[in-house]
Length: 129
Ligand SMILES: [Zn+2]
Image (cartoon, rainbow, N blue to C red; front, side, top):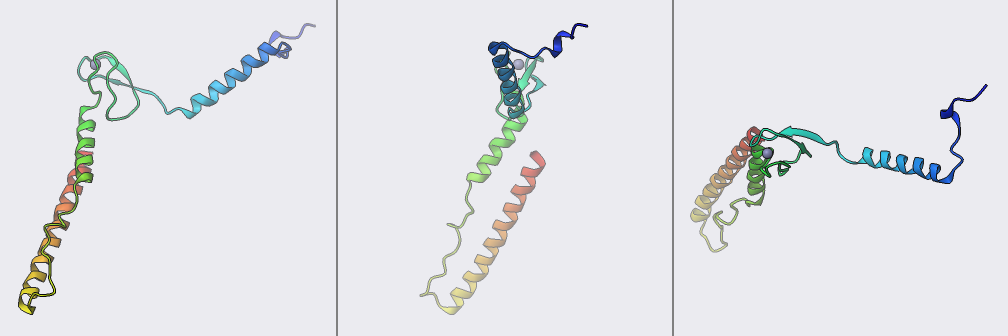
């Protein structure tokens, strides 16, 4: 009774090497992020998409997800913006108690305003993204 061919062990070293290469390739594939496809909004062709906002269509070179790209840009802009701490009223030691009192109130208002502004920016970022 002859053994089925698939049970014959690879005796040739090249065959062994081939199997090792295949295994290595499979492991490498498991490491790479899942590639998906996305329909290009410009030319209506399906293009590979790495789920990144700056991926471009392989057919026409346009952005695959312009909305995500825009919101990413907006998010970067927000991240680069520093809190308006420079505009804050400086309370100097030479200020009198009355001036100091009013400056403290203005400062508190400014801080509250900055907090509200930060909250609005956060809400917009969440809604857009
Ligand atoms: Zn396209």
